[in-house]
Length: 299
Image (cartoon, rainbow, N blue to C red; front, side):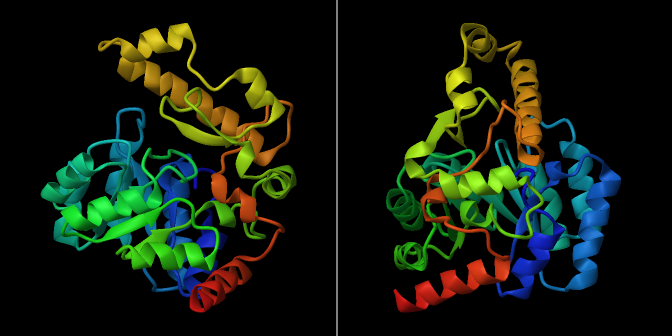
């Protein structure tokens, strides 16, 4: 989760029977990224991953990839772009590559490129969500792909996890219910918002990253609006300028999200998914995982 996942959360997840990943962009410099990976590896030998934005809006992509290859992380999750280079370079090193997909066409493309699994990002995902329902997307990919399908979006309770496994998923990617964990370094106001707001307060905006992104509908988001303005639409539709427009929008949006995550201001933009409905308190990672596991066993 952008700006949320940290080394404490990764170590807690690994210590409690699940794997975890953090976005490479959570670290501003290569030295910070390397230090984070080293810290986790010094605490455990269990595999963990890093999420890598592979499109041109991420100017750090090439350098981040080389670092992940050198340090041999367990797996890389690719998002928002063509993962071919990542897959090609990871294969000889035994690093697994899981690719975010939102439809069958893209899933088949990354499968043909050699992806080890697809992460089926559905319409209940937090962050960059897809358009298909969890069941529709998992079933579609399971019936048409030969590589494992990991469901992403809408997992708030053990019964949700049981459902996606019954549909044929090999696993699930869970995010929103961990935002308010004790280990997260975000502001107390962000964590409290996870408790105070519900599913009805989640809206989709295209103003922060150039792609559809789910956020809490705070007063500032309402003031800002969720649709690209006329200038942003023109730039995004211009073939020559689109690359630079997306980079500017993404950078500006990330700064807004960063400012809100670590300090409450009137310009508050907090990312979350519909699973926010089931966040009722701030708890340690271990307790959240234990609850999810018990619910799964009882479902």
